[in-house]
Amino acid sequence: MDTVTRKTYDEVMMPLYNPFNMVLVRGRGVYLYDTEDNEYLDLFAGIAALPFGHSDPGLIEVIKKQAFSLMQTSNFYTNDKVLMLAKKLTALTGLDRAYFGNSGAEANEAALKLARRYAYDVYGEDKNEIISCDKSFHGRTFFTMNVGGSSPLTEGFGPKPAAITHVPFNNAEELEKHISDKTCAVLIEPIQGEAGIIPAETEFLQKARQLCNKYNALLIFDEVQCGMGRSGYLYVYQSVGVKPDILTTAKALAGSLPFGSMLAIEEVAKHFTKGLHGSTFGGNPFACACACYTLDTVSKPDFLSSVKQKGKKFVKVLENLNAKYDIFSEIRGRGLMLGCVLKEPYFNKADELLDCCVNRKVLLLTATPNVLRLLPALNITDKEIEKAEELLDLAFADFKLKNT
Ligand SMILES: *Cc1c(COP(=O)(O)O)cnc(C)c1O
Figure 1 (cartoon, helix red, strand yellow):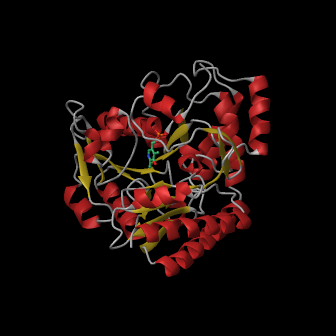
Figure 2 (tube, helix red, strand yellow):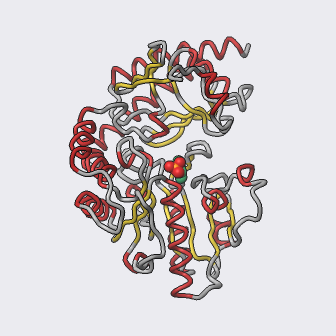
Figure 3 (cartoon, helix red, strand yellow):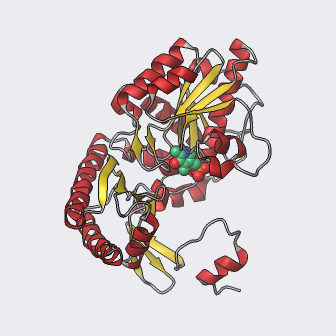
């Protein structure tokens, strides 16, 4: 019963994923180990969910301490850690009130429900349209997947929720064409993740802010993937000077635990009155203690500037490798959220390239079939980046050889 192999996955897990051919058992920093004790360099950090890599000693201390004091209270009884965290998050974001859930999808679900409810209370039931971007990703709940702009994910699940419109990303004219008095919210990822690591243009975000003001719509930023220091700023919007009315943040927020938060300005937040939304585990002191530690660490100016610096170093590494192998048309992203876009004749071969990387024991992700995605731990060292260069060099050489 206790012996498991990769084959076990195919026998007892729902076939939603097709994971690589190893079973991971432990991690330390940027290294992962499987059942055979193979060592892998981890450049995806649990999909940007591990800002300090695996088993960070500081975080372990917080986990141990909190495990001995208090793990769960529900929200009918509050706790010290959730209140401390809400104080920190509101101070650091300039938003007024926080809600806590257990994932990015839940944070976005709460944001969308709040936006609809606010519009209903203030403007009436006709103001219910939600605008989001093509190819955007906002989670897998029924509401969030339909607000997401990737249509293959939503087919065959029955009637879709109404009043959801998609516009092309970074296209202010199209947004202007579709927004109206019926729009209750515009939801944007300031750096699109799943769509292929595409930063929003500052003018697009500025125009979205302007249009939302004009039509009394709420501007929601989904920083579930790009937030928490990944871009070299605590939140991406803070680098462009466009403030949302609602912000969602998750993935890295609690350092490695499942967690998410939705923050809003007072005028909007006050419409989430008693009983309108909730969660059993949301705001539990265990995750909140971890989030306090993570936020304290990540928000330090020195930490954020080190992310910028390491991002630059990583871009240089990737550009050097591309000068050698000539497989990418573009290396894009911000900080340590990077996408390598494949060029002709390697179009849509990101999975094959990723196979070559895994084969050389360096683990990354793709984003769309044409982009290799890097989301390393934010505290990756220069020496580890050099190790990454060494392994990626071997992997790209293998890929090039297979494709000539
Ligand atoms: C991952 C992600 C989500 C969903 O988060 P889960 O924790 O998987 O529910 C939502 N939005 C963005 C931008 C994401 O990257």
